[in-house]
Length: 164
Image (cartoon, rainbow, N blue to C red):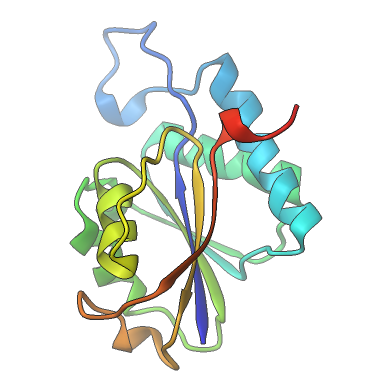
């Protein structure tokens, strides 16, 4: 059994219209929510062993703040391929993960993260910024992961639904 966490990057800022999409930073709410999601997984004792993150500034900053809130001490891999907004990009990277990792988190963008969650569980769920899904996968190896893999949505946390 493997566990996949899917985290959409936290709320980004649109203040700097001259920045490329890849370079947009987080806004004030995003900074707060990223830490809160890390604190949540620390309290729940559900920290992943590996984090795969998009290279976009808003995704990388989300991960940094998640780590600050959670105390995560595992491995972090930043990958430009995860800047893509389609689920196959995430699946392509996940099937390459070493099987020593039981739990992995991907940090990325919509619509890809919502579509990935739907592809793996058969359930469509809204994933606003900083939303975090936990999916249980009945596979022994990450290489078994594919469009036909059906996992179970165990938890879905949205920042606005968390108590302050």
